[in-house]
Image (cartoon, rainbow, N blue to C red; front, top):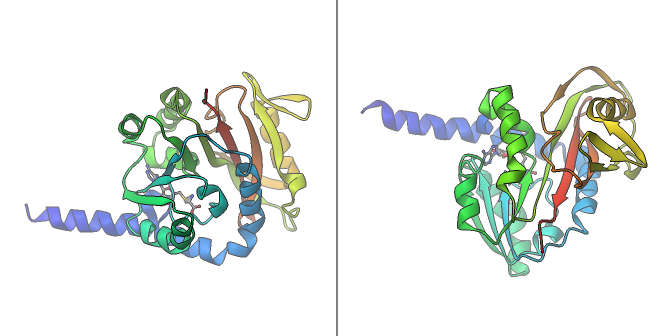
Length: 265
Ligand SMILES: C[S@@+](CC[C@H](N)C(=O)[O-])C[C@H]1O[C@@H](n2cnc3c(N)ncnc32)[C@H](O)[C@@H]1O
């Protein structure tokens, strides 16, 4: 069929350029140019991961891209990392950024160009002893799946699929505009919480999910309509986590949710 090679080439180019709208060259250029503005968020994520010390030596890193926001000291805790991304160029960038450090610490790195969400059950069965980190892709699942209800159902199901694996995720919770002169991103804006059946517990206060969202938006001077990334139910009940603001663009911010499910014993 004469169209097949063109389709394969076109798919490659399209994934290299924008990786289904969630990565690709667009993402790499923006991440590179935004390093300074993103640094407080990168630091907050490193602080969150610092006490996460799973006993298992193998990590599946999903949505790894170039690891723009991933702290090297956390990666070096593992003996082997299998990283996954649909972006065909991500492996090159990731090796350039993290390869020397990982080699120096004797970490074996395998980078796969693969739709790891579509293949998740296969990957989990292949690596029953691995822990998993979803590296800021679950909040974009609604775009990749293209159907809000199906995306929400998939995200709610995830923690059942991951039973027996220590796992964690950082993902978009909400995103939108902030008013001019938003507050600085300091540790005071990094909000700890525990997931409950009704919403979250934060500093002795129980919030229903809607009230929690209002609290978060007020804390950073949100204005206009904000997008809900449908990730409120990703973490199972009783999971502790942190909400971390991210100045994705100067006036377009995200609230990231980070959590780790121990599942060890
Ligand atoms: C917002 S970026 C985050 C990248 C990375 N965590 C970082 O800090 O550079 C999301 C990444 O997830 C990747 N991605 C999206 N859906 C994916 C899937 N189903 N399987 C593997 N990677 C995926 C995208 O290509 C993109 O590189």
